[in-house]
Length: 102
Image (tube, rainbow, N blue to C red):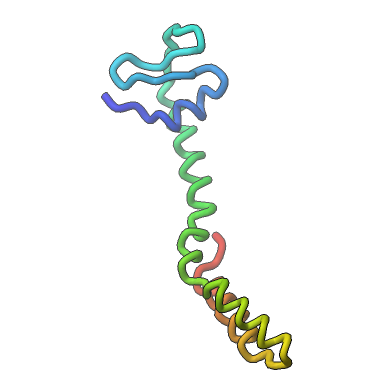
């Protein structure tokens, strides 16, 4: 049997301190904790929702222009040429528009 460790730890926060797939879940004193599958399922639903709420971040991150591009744009902006900085901002805005927050 394979237990959903992450969901168990969330469902039994402060109670379950260790999990053994073959033996079950245990408290700090090593006593067995009786698991309620509906409570674990609810915790899994919450964890999945939390992950989905921030999934856009990992999609966006590699699409943004580099910080080196930003530094170069800032340099040229300080010299009076804002075209690179405007392009950098536009590229960032496109990433945000193409990959919106949920």
